[in-house]
Image (tube, rainbow, N blue to C red):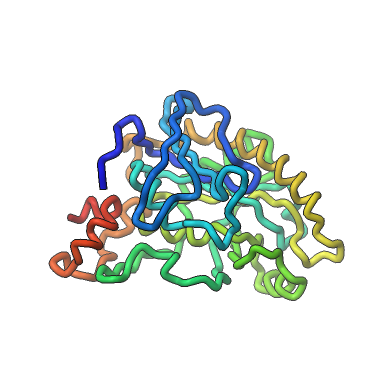
Length: 295
């Protein structure tokens, strides 16, 4: 895999969810199309400068919202962020609330996930096919990054909730009332369709990951019908607050080794079970950016 120009190198990445398709505050912007062994990412990356930091932005669903949740190229997206040198990854997304107190317009910063997806499990990992790794995932969110993001959201004027469980359903349809009631009965907090695979792959790529869940509606557990027009209006309102949050969070992220690396950034230490001499050369090439510290 060819070396990228140094001006494309970034320590900070941002994934924009539904309604958040750009960060207007970025300056000196380059549009960069990256190739990966897993196909093309969701879109070109917008690489620019904010508060003196180089930042890579990717709209999760592509410009014009072309990709449904079940079509997202998660492995390509995270592999591309790793190619750019990203160590800290912020992820904004729309969610439905499973609790009365998590109202539309509120921001939730979940620290756990529950998987209710149905797709091929291999889409949630870079490993297998000759190189086996088992990363620790008990704490799937980087608490350093999450707290920076939460404090920035508070400063931007958001009503914030720390912690909770994000249940990742398949989509693209919203929940049935039975599904929503089941999710609530488990004590889960928000429901979405995108974050779990990102979190798992970011951990394998040794990238600190923190989600920001922006509530658009009460899912299907309340009597009223979830109206898509209302959801879209809330999406746009949430997106504007998310932009302000991200612009405030980025200057607070420690870069250049200014703090000890979180555990997520050395998650593969001791996690690769296959001895080095048994690694297939083709897989070393495919996983190049992930294995750079280990070859």
